[in-house]
Image 1 (cartoon, helix red, strand yellow):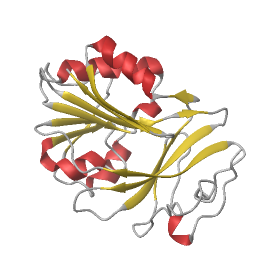
Image 2 (cartoon, helix red, strand yellow; image 1 turned 45 degrees about the vertical axis):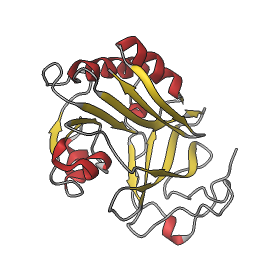
Image 3 (cartoon, one colour; image 1 turned 90 degrees about the vertical axis):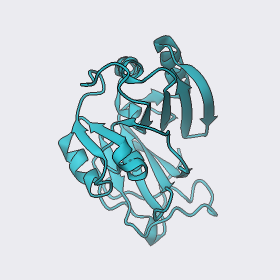
Length: 231
């Protein structure tokens, strides 16, 4: 196993909620990419490295999001897509607490408590859709159902952009640590963790194609992937 070594002081997580983890680093923290993978794994207070898999810091740069109206699935916590899209984004999450946490970061977005498995919207209501590290909290059955719902509410030709984790672990939980860059925003670090044991991009591709999407773009890294699909 890869040991969890202490990160520099600016790479400390400030809060944690295992098995539903969305923890933000302080606003001055950055991941140190000059370090080796083993050295770049942050030490998270309250997380036992013997029972939890924590990734090295992963850099994600979002220079653009889809145009037009967007439904963002599982948008709470950091509200990454809502921060970029503002009022164009209908940001949904099942948990009001996650929405409350994200609202201050993206006050112009349209925030709503809603279930991705039963979206309270009309057919073809949105131009495009996004999901930023949300599917890792869902069972495979729920992933499939949510993709079918997203397909339903997208207009013809609409795109679905997905960022999510890749993992295969026997640990109690998997936690991916991210350093995120957004247009005209200060770079920040955060983390997402769940108790699923296995996930990769192939699950999504299968479910997307079964729902009727075509895969337009795929980018696969060691611990995460990006997929752009089109209705």
